Length: 164
Image (cartoon, rainbow, N blue to C red; front, side):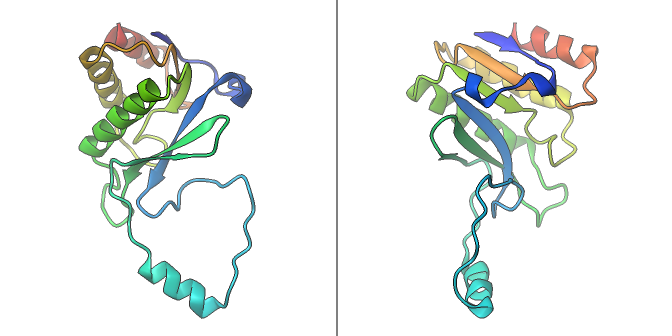
């Protein structure tokens, strides 16, 4: 597998098959590309929100087609901190199972737990390496890691060292 850490501005959705998006248990953190106006009264919307079931942390929900958006639920906004290492590990394992099952060639993902949280990026690099070493994978062929803007060359070197 080829691991790349491109500059943020060089990512093009046309060049990837799946994009991992960091998300919370109620899907509040993500940005929807389509504006959807609510239907029904305000009281109906409030009741619907109160009755909504939280998604289990560590879950990955596929959405859309090209590229597939993989909503990685690694935050519970009722918790402090909102992320947990085990949720990130579980989401990573699920993302890679999805990639293998769907034969995803080019997968892009951020440093999970660090987009909307303060998970150390070095811990993510370790979890990523563990996932890659535990499984013989033909897919994804290329992993595009979207490093945080403040990632330095030391972080990038750790990712490459960890993923071998």
